[in-house]
Image 1 (tube, rainbow, N blue to C red):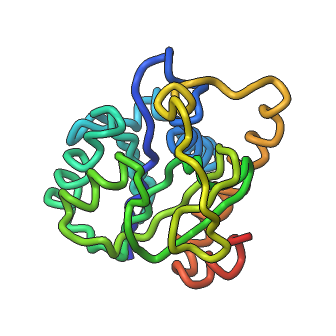
Image 2 (cartoon, one colour):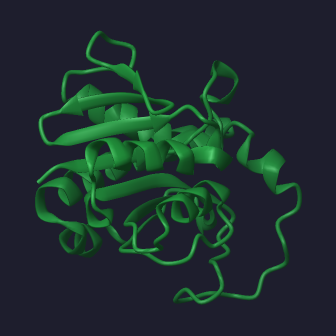
Length: 199
């Protein structure tokens, strides 16, 4: 079965090391493991994305900037015919502690503009997604263990900031685990990946 993995982020070197770009980094790590690169000859520009097709797995990094990720996603779905359950969106989550992974079958965007754009453009909230914790530990309302927390100040500045030096090793380990989770999803399905990697 074909699969589409969408790693979200912002294009450009000024954003590469920011919290908002962990989705890009997961896509790049999976490509590296498969002996490919988004800078290599196998990559192509398609639907406003950098795209690699490696067997049944298509990796895409939308270049439309985070808040317009849905336009790239819709184009890829229309061109290639991916069903919602064949898509996995990978992105940052400020409401999860740094290093935590959370895989879900679907649901609301919980305030994340990138996934919100994708759900709007694909007209369904049943898109599997893998969230990577980059934040301060608050969980979105309605999620198990949610707490009432004050709004995060300067959220845009926070997600567009680089990781602190002491965070870099935990983030690198999180990227590795997220790539493993994506591999499980592609090989065994979302339920197996949720059981193995949520925590």
